Image (cartoon, rainbow over all chains, first blue to last red; front, side, top):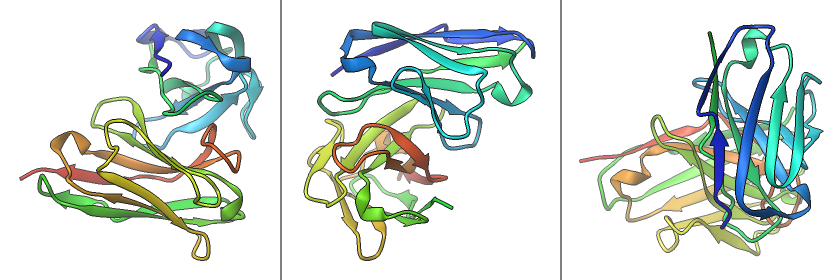
Length: 109
Length: 121
């Protein structure tokens, strides 16, 4: 089972700034099979990124993913008010169970 | 429009049972794997269980193995989670999620709104 460590735990930023979130895996993630989800308070998670860098349907291009092996990054450029949320990473493509990182919260400064 | 609607949550005593349902619409249900993911109050996401599109293979987190059973009725476009021997630590919002693929659960691209489960005496 892959253990994921997300950092920072909380990031305080202003609208218009950029956010860089990190996801580190305990072992190499096969073929860049990593997804990112966004969750706003009181709402279900939403798929943002899969395959480490492919945006899901309807996700704006200010969201970008990168990385491989054990280190992955989610970048949100030009933060909009609706981007303040918690973000989770999740690897796939190897043995189950699926696991999630502990989450990174992007809050308004 | 692709939609998932969970139901069946509620308050149950420790040791009790509950069956969750997830009604799917807007897509060919049998063509996709499905999962249940839960979130305890104030905590992160925990994948609980998954099932292939045909229902032939099921998968569980160690924390629920032997107590929970996932199933699906493709003729009714409905996913189920039978939860037995419930514990306080099972208290959470339970989400139903559709996968991008038909086989092993991987990428959950559509989520329901969740149904809350509280295990308490």
